[in-house]
Length: 398
Image (cartoon, rainbow, N blue to C red; front, side, top):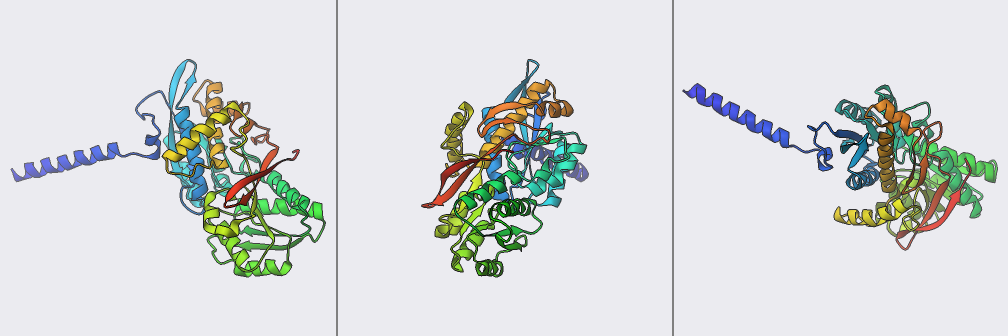
């Protein structure tokens, strides 16, 4: 009798455990789509939600989630499929990125979106290609992301372009010398810094780069390298780096009495940098992909209104980050490719991607032979009175 009761209790607990497991939710579950339905297409969201790029990754994810809210389905040959987002955290780490990529592949996704951060995108790229699953980067700007990979596309401009834009801006503003600060081993930071060096040297001449400094991942004390920079007395400092690092560099530079203009790339368009650097952030200049005050398309105008409400609902600042707009566009591109492919076959979707052309939030999007978006415009912004303010657009022919 006692054995029967114990067996009944054991079975009861097992059943309860199974029920709780079945009810557990993932980020994909929040965005709809029943895993038991035959009419579901899974799209992978490959982004950092933790680590040094977690802040920017989350902004990109918000844009993708909102796009899924606005466009939750796609029609293929007269049948409607629900889109289910499968989110993984690549943790801003190249090793973790491989594990995250393998998890998405195993889950059966048909397309992958991301990542914020070129290094993790490069690390995962071959795995997506080997699995014949197309990936669409939103803001990963290093050329190596798509180079030699027929399955990786992106909707943003590239670092050679961005580096040239910022070098031209500095030179046109009267800078004759520059210092460059980059993160050792980070593909985005070191790549963009190198392109700036090349472009500025070609404009201002040999010897125009008076200091090149590198720092380690997770470094918080920059006084030593900034002391070297101060001794070189540059007109400008170009310091492409993460959201976490930026306010530390800015504050410590100003505390050392460095008065040179501080500049960076797209990662610095994040309100947390201003919040953490405080008054020291005034005058910082950066390049970015988009400006909400100038919606270029009908889709953009609708996005600005709706996404501001969505940000408010999610307790976020109502200032629209450019990477959110790019995440939204990457999702639109994926849907267009699926629709044009007329199939859920990943190879067919990849082939359709190569010929996609849409008017997105960040402008018209189509791809060149490398899978890179054909974009030739950047937005220059400055921190003024504690906020990002539009300065000008810069166009450079590729």
